[in-house]
Image (cartoon, rainbow, N blue to C red):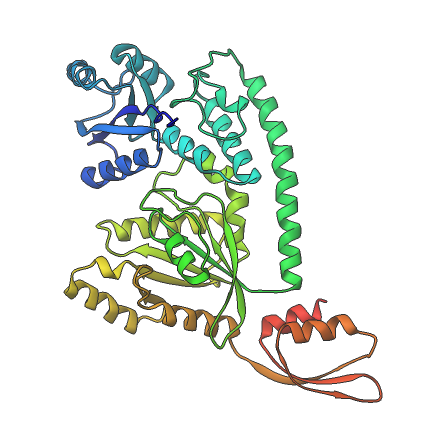
Length: 424
């Protein structure tokens, strides 16, 4: 007996192009990104999209009466069930538009929350999504609470068993937030213990960051052989995935793949996902992966830099820009990108798909991590077997001799390895 295909929700994407908005983005690119966001939810079928030019947003309805009637006819003719508005929508605007159009409505924040909920794969991710959703709901009309009744899946705005109308005030939300925060604190504490355990091993951490859909997960899979979800889809990865990688002629490292950044990321999400992004703060090297073929690659890169700064990543941290997808550029542009990378030591040009430039990337990371390698002689008491074992684990021992007072070692190591050894 064949399974029935899931019923898709017919969605229409609108990008309000508000002329008076000082942070206004190029409308065509913004609409394309919004459609990609919609495609990231498998239960949605995008049946229409359009840019709606506006001088300014109308307080109660966002759009003017004429445009609302025009859109109502278009949405009705296309049997649209959900309207996605690429931008902020107030609770009053949402309620009024839903009444006029007889459809469900999600703004950009709501859609991103849906995607995050759909993709969260770890306990920490699930807790963070619930906290972000509650923080968002605290300032909005409480309409759908089905996400509090399920461990996995969407937040209940799209698909599912339908909206559960439960009246809940801010005190109820605050109680839920306190409960979730306690649970998350436990998870974060566990992650801190894991980080402390890694510091004792220790392997340097190399973190991949970048705008969503820049190719981080594809690069991660290429370098590690792991099978992290890597699709041409926004927010394909939401939980940091970590794997050990052995660099050629260099140290073993832990490579971390992180959630993609995006412009206008809801503040609730930035706050709630800080624990996930703490892996970036613990990184020895940060690789900022850019889709160099994207028309707005520079604007995307600036968004990523801003978030890294907001997270507290210091300027002294080793950072490189990895200009990915050179294989998608016209030949002349690709050559210009490669030439720029040859001139700028902080830039690497590559293709995670074809493998071009990967060896150079690994080599640069190895040199950066090893830094100034020094040689010295150590004397360890015979009873200090733990430190002796650590030295051999790190593969820094060039020669070992036994003396009257203990083991004598000739070691070749980096400053960070020496510091970790001193801390054992």
